Length: 137
Image 1 (tube, rainbow, N blue to C red):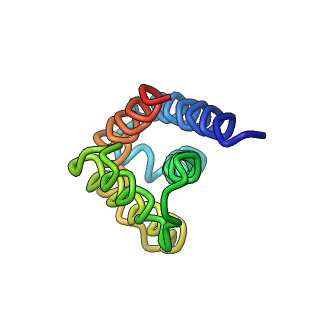
Image 2: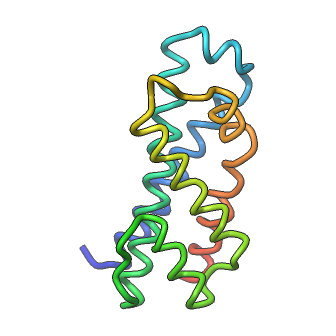
C-alpha cells in the first residue's frame, strides 16, 4: 500500500469514528456516566478518533518526506513548521494527543467533564484537521 493510500484510509477512518461519535452527542453527561455500555462506547470511539487523527498526521509527515517525529505531538508541530496546518490547529491537535493519552492510560480516573467536553465541542477540531489534509490531497 502506498503512503497516499494510507492517507486516504486514515481520512476515511477518522470520518467513520466522527460519524459514530455524532450519535452519542444526544446523551447528557449524566446519561453517559450512568450507562456502562454508552460510557465504554464513547471512551473507545474518542480514543479511536484521536488515534486515527494522530496516525493521519504521521502518514502525511511520511508522505511528504519530512523529519521523523520523536513524539505523537511532534507530527502536528512538523506539519505546522511546513505550513501544512496553522498554529491554532496544531495547538488543538497537540491538546487532543494529551486527551488521547489520558483516555488510554488514566481510564479509571477520567474526568467526565473533559470527556463530555471533547465529545460535544472538540470533534470539530478533528474534523478541521481531517478537512485540511483532505484538501491537500
